[in-house]
Length: 260
Length: 236
Ligand SMILES: Nc1ncnc2c1ncn2[C@@H]1O[C@H](COP(=O)(O)OP(=O)(O)O)[C@@H](O)[C@H]1O
Ligand SMILES: [Mg+2]
Image 1 (cartoon, rainbow over the protein chains, first blue to last red):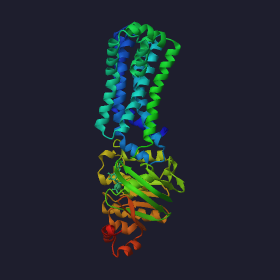
Image 2: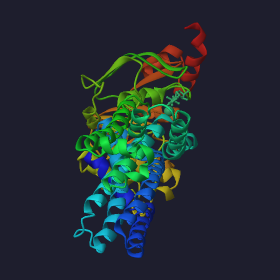
Image 3: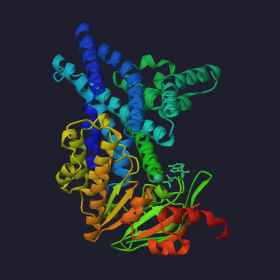
Image 4: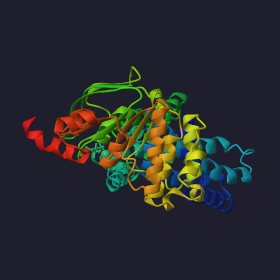
């Protein structure tokens, strides 16, 4: 798998898009930190952008890379390489290069700002961890969609729909159901609903870490009781790991059964 | 070398292979013939593990290939369509394949043979179809595997390259290699093949030497013999 990963990764870090993505975060980081002297406000703004943008880029890059590397894949399939390693190698190549753009693009301005000295380092670290998780998760989901759809346009459409659902529609339905079922106790429901969507879960984790659970609305107190504890934090991490592991497993499964 | 028994494959409702039994012996050149869409490429890809059979078994060098991948080290393959990552240069592609196979190969002699030097620093997306096919041939012949599988090797080649290709095939046979070749050009088949495998409607319709084929169909050239095979289809 190492060699496949190496070639996919090199291929991607030579691409113009990786640089655009990197410079975008670089600019965003500098602008927010140096124009906005309040670190925790900068982290919140960053979070709001990251939580929506990272999944979108992961989905789009994931599908695009899968379809564009069709020739590379066919070439590899005839070589003495394990099938699952071909697809996992490509997947980690994409997810790795996106994560690198994110980590460097945000890390440089934060380091320049003197983050390493400030105690915001943990907030920032959590932001990066969550960003990397979201990259890994949505790239994996994108690969799954692409491997199931020969038709590029269809695959792309489904991928964007998935992002739209997770980032926008899900919250809408969630809020709507909170309003409709107002008179019922909804703590457990909202907690489960949050845990099931990696984007919502990430947002909750960061807001709790920043200790501004008031932003979470009426469920804030309940959330804090669960997600705010050590157990709650690690349970959330576990959910994120599962969100990543299951699509990777499905990708492996499908790739071993597909005809080329 | 290769042992195939009761191989079935369908794509959706399209039954492409309906029970193939085939034994490929060491050191011979086999030509796989059949009309377009008769499943030649599917058969080859099944041996390579690119197509997963519905039923039946395939053994390469005495080992079942199911779930295996190391056996592909023993196979050099020329795909029917020369699809390469367009953003790579020819020499980058060759280096990559060498690295992936952990084998230095002898690309240089082949590059010289097909006069590819001027193209080595060009991106694959800028090459013509014929030149891509030559690169395809370099990749297929540069390693020293026991088994060579060539899917329509003569597509798009100029007469000069075609002569070089035949020479290469003969040389590989002299070196004791086993070759599996599909082709549409009967003259080409006539010149290089020891045995002919004729695929029709998902089954092996004929397998035997060229001589046996002529005798069976009472023809004097392969083209007519194949045509005769197809015509007598109704009579079994
Ligand atoms: N991956 C695939 N998915 C669906 N159908 C396929 C696939 N590969 C081949 N086929 C179909 O299988 C049949 C045989 O194709 P192929 O093996 O390429 O024939 P040949 O090489 O003899 O021309 C064709 O009808 C083709 O459309
Ligand atoms: Mg074919």
